[in-house]
Image 1 (tube, rainbow, N blue to C red):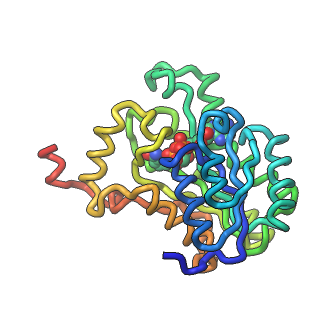
Image 2 (image 1 turned 90 degrees about the vertical axis):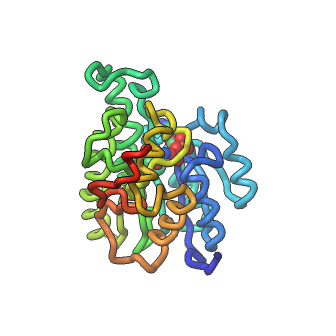
Length: 267
Ligand code: NAI
């Protein structure tokens, strides 16, 4: 259903690893709606994933960048503006990784050096991206910056481990930096709090498939898919949501408003 919502807009999408990635689906939908895009991911992910296939489909260039490296981000944002012919209208931060989760450390026995790395990759990178874009004056007026979050920022999901704190930090950066972006150039900054989604990052969480079914049953509309999340990103990059900023927007099929769902008892 292409209706040119992003006609004439240009942006950078972080985090498309494979077809399951939320960023991958978002890139496809943004392209369908008329946007021109630069794709980026960490150098190691570029070697593992199939991002070039996506780039071929949507006619995008791929620029490697470790989102924790200010040097890489500087290079990415300078080059993207050259490729896209000017300032950016949107940025999607779709990045998450926990070393403690990957190494199956219990929450009560975490390695704190790894925890700092997790925060750097999953949350502080969002600040780094925004700081670099601001320093380079790289955003057009009324642009839109979005990052992906999860409700463990507000509520306890025991197996989500230190990613809960990463998401709390991420959401806080969206609010705080959203203030400065709004004042500077009417750019809006929001996070989308997405349902559990079957992706590489998602399924790395312990007991993910049981939790996915639980959440699907708890949500009157079911879990939101990566394609539905991509549609929501399109609306946030479009001119139809210009006055929405500094928000954590729940995209969860109703999960967050539920108290009791009898169908869960029969799972
Ligand atoms: P994914 O595994 O497809 O994407 C995560 C991406 O982060 C990968 O492309 C990976 O290469 C990238 N990344 C990791 N370290 C990086 C670094 N140093 N620099 C640049 N990129 C790096 O998984 P998914 O699910 O699409 O994740 C996207 C976002 O959505 C993440 O922030 C995740 O926490 C969030 N999210 C995911 C949910 C899920 O259940 N899958 C639910 C709610 C939020």
